[in-house]
Length: 497
Image 1 (cartoon, rainbow, N blue to C red):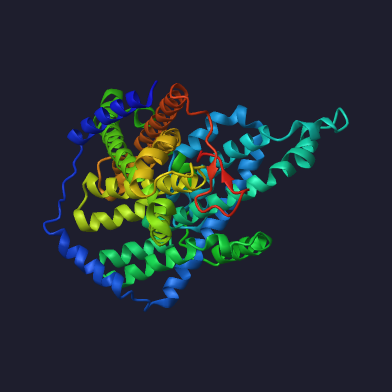
Image 2 (image 1 turned 45 degrees about the horizontal axis):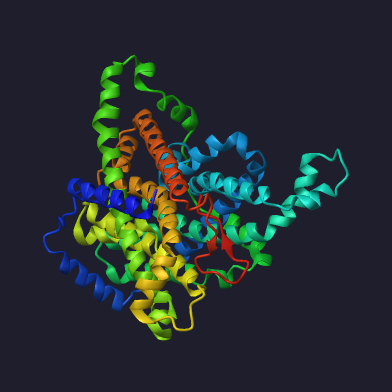
């Protein structure tokens, strides 16, 4: 399949999705809200320093503990990944917010909820990536060992040590993702920076909301400076202590048994009519939710692709100039650092609960990631001595040569955008997350599990379609690109699993 055929099909799907999607601004005068937010950004209010410090500490604690537990579980599963692949793909297909909503019924508003909500999907991601690293280890060193040694000994003494540099780099990247996940968990009630952001926005305290955003950016932007590997054990110990000291209300006895009972379909549990249950779950909820999720993800992917194609030259000095590239780099790093859900929440306050806020958030965040990766790769392209500069260089030299990378990155982000589109329903947008949240609120957990299975199947389907397209477009099975804020020659990450 040629790129122009893929582009034509992509354009047709996008036009069809735009015809089905609700892209209206439902607020009567979004400019008033935007102006108020602008004033808040210009005068951030750090008044409640104690509360902000506590939320910041817990955001870090959830991230370190969740990523640490996920990495440990992923490392244990990596050698047997071929046997547990379906399990790993299933747990990572469920977003952290969905895991949190489920766990709230078992562990309540507790530190364990936040840690497990991050650790479970991350374990599946780490298992896949670590398994790829182990497969690529040099077999020569292992061949030098005496025959008959147990597999565990070969792993511990030969294969894992070879992969440690890549594992450390990828774990650092995942820690950055974990910080974003930890902050977003505040939107379901956990005491992180997301909780502070939601509370201040709903009260119209935009100065305090700006302070929360600035603190979050101050954490995540210089993260590769302050995360020193020899200090990671101290970070983990401090995080565990901080979470142990959190005062949480008890859930009461029998929470796990009630949860296990409630996830059994109602027709089995209570003898209710199967046809009515199936119609309610799959016709009234799963079908419109899945359609809206696909529509939203398609429009967002198109927006991200367009932004990436136009923005990646902004960090290439030969196109934008040295000063322009510095500014472009800063803008893209900020956009990719703010979680999609957090951006969408802000846009909902401006435009109302339509697909427009979610599309803007997903396109800006993912487009910035793709643009940043392409821009870094463009900086390493060898050019002719007489190569042009400025926009001519972008249009006639860089973009044509990076066309394969561009399509590969877009296809890799497709599954992630779909996953994020589903959770936008928690903001009132009628994707699968909207119906999942409704089921949680109504304590109809059997419907929730069925809808989550639909979400997992959608993710499986998009992943398979993406693989087929990459193969037919000869984009390769695996894309190795520099880390999103690479530090050197060894800083590479596999595709985001």
